[in-house]
Length: 285
Image 1 (cartoon, rainbow, N blue to C red):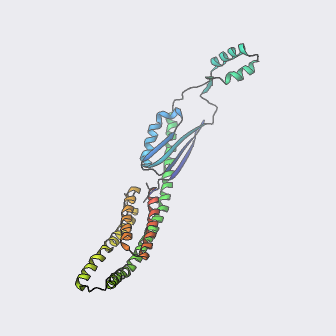
Image 2: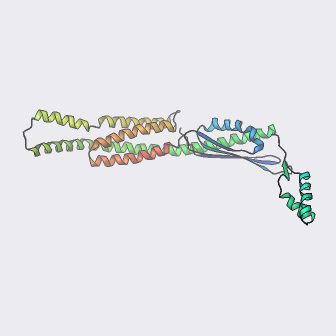
Image 3: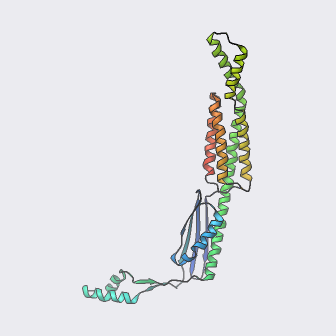
C-alpha cells in the first residue's frame, strides 16, 4: 500500500495544571526535513522526540509543535522584587510621581520578571510521549487515506495510457500501409524504372526505422509493473518515479517514430496522463 507524504495529526493531554498539545504536519520532500517548535524547558527531550518522529514518518517536510499551556495557579515566572524596588528608587529621583506610577514605569524595565527553570517530571514526559504516539498514529492514518485516493488515481491514469496504447496498436497497421503507399508514390513520381527486389529491400529498411513493435511491448510491460508496484510492500514514490521515467521513454520513442498525425495525437494524450502520474508520485512516501 502506498502512503502520501501529506498528513496531519494532533493529540491533547490535560494534566492537573497544564494542557499539552502535540501537533504534526507534513508535506512532500526528497528526504526527512523536520522542523521542531518546543518550549525551552523541554529542549533536553527534543532529540528523543525527533528520533520517534523520524522512525515513524521516514520522509517529508515535517513541522512538529509542542504547546504547553498553564491551567493551574502555579507559575514559574516570579517578580524580581529587588530589581523592581531598585528601579523605583532610581526613577523617584528623576520624576515626581507616586508609588503606583513608579511601579508601572519600573515594570517596563528589563529583568523585572524572572523565570525559574522547571525540571521535567518523568510522569509528565510519559504523558507527552503518549500524546506524540497518538499524533503519529493520526498522521499516519491520514497519510494512508491520502495514499488510497492517490492509488485510485494512479490506476485510472495508467489505465487510460493502456487504452491509448490499444488505439495506437489498432492504427499501427494503417500507418505502415500509408507509409508504403507514400514510398511507392514517390518512386512512381520519379518516372524511372526501379528494380523491384531492391525497392522492397529499401522499403523494409525504411519501415523498420519506424517500427514500434518493441516500444509497444515494453510500454505495456512498464504499465503492468507500475500497477504491480502499487500493491507491493516495497512500493515508494522514488520507485514509482523511476518506472514513470521508463514509461515516458517508450512514449517519447513511439512519438518520434510515428510520423502519423492520428498516432501523434494519441501520444500527446499519453504524455498528459503520464505528467499527472509523475506529479503525484512526488508526494508518495
